[in-house]
Length: 234
Image (cartoon, rainbow, N blue to C red):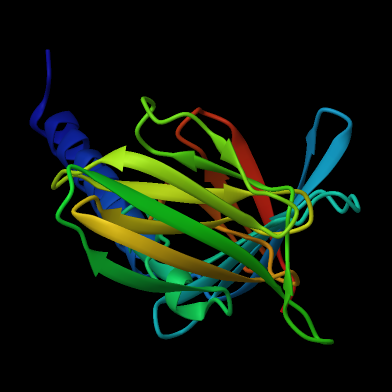
């Protein structure tokens, strides 16, 4: 038999539990993640070092590298959002922060086919120089990968259309650079790529669950379930 006294105690206990959960959620939502954080994760035979700089204005800088000489690493800029226990990194600022650039010249064509010409230039302290030996991949799988010559040049012939294709240049020694064009004209594209830049993370979103926030570290859970501890450096 449940007495009035026991019933009252049960109600009070439930109220305290509800209050605790509400305050916990509010505390999580109100906590700010600012400053520089670093994680070191073992991936195969390499140690992947990741850095995230959370700024007060809601922007972040992300970088990762294995430290090997053949690894340019990755870098991205954007805005971060925290809602309840969710952290979203939106890499929407990377393009505006890069020194590498595309110089695109478009020429109208009356033919059913178009020609897209590429020239890859390496930006160097001692002067820009042609960079050969790289290759291009298109986001349309029907377009096969194609290589540049020793002078960093390549030309591809495509059917004229209103489709938009993205071409990305890959090579050893230079970061990736992409360009988006509409296949309605001939193009001459000069890619000036800064050899000192890491590979960019552009137009991507990373989502994490915040498992723990402490004064000197945070624990994030990736979408694949893997947990990563980031230690605050300052």
